[in-house]
Each structure stands twice: as C-alpha cells, then as structure tokens.
Image (cartoon, rainbow, N blue to C red):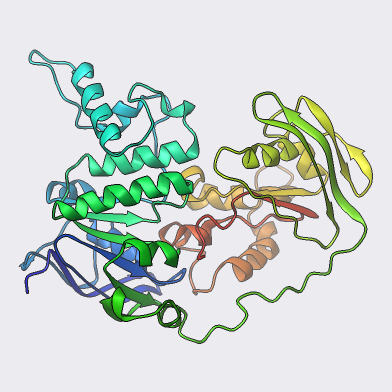
Length: 420
C-alpha cells in the first residue's frame, strides 16, 4: 500500500540530548492520524524535521513512495506539506488577509499588491471555514482565539496535501473547536492527509482514524483508533497504569491570602469579588472572552482597574503596574511560551527577572549570581540532561517561566502547552 507520507527511523540529537530516537508514522490519503505522546516524547522535533526546520540525523521520509528531504519550511510547503503550529506568530499591525497571504500576495498586472483580490480570497476562505472574522480586520484587534483561527486559515490557504496540526485547539473555545473539526472532515473528504497532535484524548477519539504513540523520543505503537480503548492509549503514552493522576496535598487555612472586592475594568470585567485563602489553590473558570484573563491582568497591573479593592493577607494594596505586584510578592505565569518570549542568552536574563537584585556593581546582569536560581529552575522545569543549553528547541511547556520569590502565584492558562 502506498502511503501519502511514510516516515521510518527518524533520529535527532541536540548536543548530548537525544530528542528523537526512532520516529515513525504512516499517513493514508483522506485520513486523520493522531500523533500522541507526553511532554518530551519527541513530537515537536518530529514535525520540525518533516517541515525542514531541523535536519535529521538519520531515518527515511517518503512521499507517495518517493524518498524526500526538505531543507526549509518553504521547500516543504512547495511540496504540499503545511503546518498549523501551536505557537502563534501573527504580524499585529497587518490585516487578517495580509497575514494569511504574507510573502505570496497576489499582484496586479502592472505591479503592486492586488489588495482587493487578496481580501476577497481571504474572506472566501474564512467564510468556508465558518470563522466569524473579517479579512480587513487588524490582527492587533483580535482575541487570542481569533488569532489561532487565522493561523489555521493561513495553513489551509496553501491547499497542501499533507497538513500537520500541532495542538490547534489549545487557545480556542469549544465552538471554534467544533468549527475546526467540521473543516477537518471536509479536508478528509477531499483526500487530504492530516497529522493531528493533541493532549486532549477526547478530541483524538472524536476526529482521528488512526494513531501513533511516541514516548521518550521513541516509537511505541500504531494502529486504528477503533481497535483500542482510551485506557489502553493512556497506558501506551505514559508507560504505566494510572491510579490517582493527582493527589491533593495542599491544606487550605482560614486565613485570607488574596481578597478581591468589586474589581471592575470598563468593557472588560464588572464587580468581581473572591477570596483565596493561604494554602489554597483557587480556580477561575470561564469560556474564551468571558473575562478570565482580564481579572489576572488587573491583579498584576497589566491592565488598569476602574474600581475595586485588593487585599493581601488582610492589608489593602495598590497595584498600578507589574513592578508593584512583584514588590508585593505576587508572581504571574501568563500562559505564553516561545512566541512571546526571548531566546538564547537574553532569555536567561529575563527568566531570572524576579530575582534581578542579582546584578553586579556596574549595574549589569550578574549571570553567575543567579546560579542557585538557575539550578532550582532547572530542577523544577526540566528532566532531560542538557536542556538548559538547548531550551529553545524543546516543547513549549518546558519553556514556561518559574517565578522566583513570589508568595502568591497568579497562573493564567499556565497549562496551555501541557498534557491534559
């Protein structure tokens, strides 16, 4: 049987770290193939090799039986392979249509961009996908969910034969997810092959036909989803039987830690009140656009509240900016990862901003003085030896920041890139 995509024995290492030891996958025409695995399983590295972002150390990639090698994403796109990435990469000061057709804008007969045709084509695509977005809207005015939908439309605009979808529902609500699943069904019917990566097993069993499981950079198993149960798939992913996935160990007290009363921001949130006690994990739940993020932004000084009071351990406090919040011992994990965070040397500096007294007398950042913080951060955030050197090349969850000396943590969508 000839496969649309047939991958065997892919290997990739970064320095002394083997990110992928044996990557395999067989994709049939007109099907959705789920690529499953926990954090660090090698899924992202596998997709990046197939897209030409990383060069493979070994293995074979075949398209319709023919051995291929892609040296860049542009080359992979030209060959009919597109990807919807988990990390958003919009150009905020450009329109939706300009983002969708960036670098391949239709041109007028005598030169210049044909904006009318570009807007018409973009709006037609958005309407086909049933995304309620106007092609002439500026990206900076869209919600995170809408930006994710534009990224999906951008990938589908290439009319690729093979489409990789890496956690495409991580930043969108249930309604938008169902619109995406309907679009996937249409793509299947037209003969496209889709490799779908998600930690949400309910999605996998809803839309996928077959599966492949990676664990610790190695291939574990493949097959038809109709032949296995959810429990069997989980066992392959984690490599053991799961009892209690999480044992609650915190012991809430009667002492108020954070008290919020009547918090409001014009057009965003109105009269929000709650009390989180010391030792308590207090959850705030709501659909996309319901105001969850705005509550956190006001608490940390990222947005200005028009009224309301905040008390920490019974004392009223004023938070006008993030520096005020940090001085009060508030930490904030905002759910962003690679797309909005710096990399390499500067990344290390910003990673330890909560302990920025670690500067030498010349006022420059003292990297050696943060050795203790770095060791603590590495112990908490990484499992693989050598991750500190190659942080930017691993999965997005491993790049979430650890807040240094915070006494109260305000995590907003902190598990967006994590397994669920």
